[in-house]
Image (tube, rainbow, N blue to C red; front, side, top):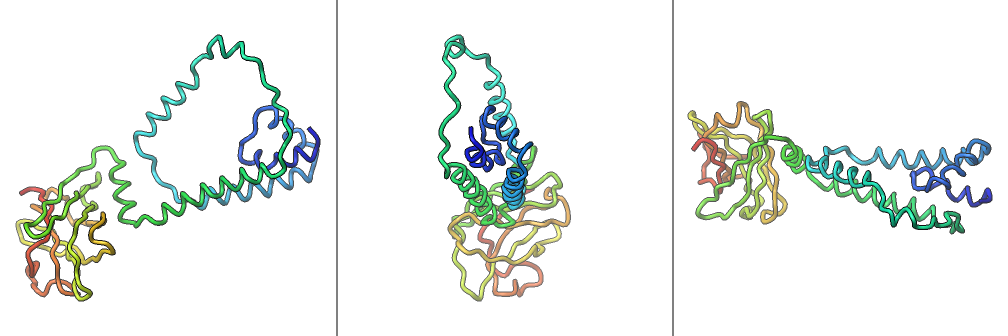
Length: 247
């Protein structure tokens, strides 16, 4: 393979996308050619920046078993038929724009993943983090007679932080707000105000609890005037849904 063809392979080399023969030829070129090393450094800088631009997220637990199964399948000895198959000629004519297409595809994939991650709210990200843990708690939403809200609350291992995932909330006016309540033997305690963009779709509400979740009888949400309930002892309207804990 001539030098120009090897130059064309440098972007794919930076991505680890070459077969062993091509990889060896590019390695030899890099050892002897300063210009090739300069090109490689430029491509590696681009790929490194792409990796760093994507926020880290914990992988779902089931992926570990899936990875082990795939690795075990790859270690399966080849069949006799495959051993008798003639080796194909690995040398081929290099299309000059092919490495650039490979780089463009990786860029599109990485930035697409980054965009999807950034579209998730911090509350949704926390929900996903909790449900990726082992032994998290799930408590179902109990709708009121007037509102068909549905969903659940998940609580992490620390027992004092959770996320309510709820849909089918009622539409409220601009001078109203939702208010979250923590209910125990001493009454109802405000845990904050919130609004949602689309009440019909899944909405995520972070719940910070001063004490472990199982020390409460329930959590509830009411519709209140902007600024919160005027009642110092609790909600001023009936709750639109509740999350029973120790009912």
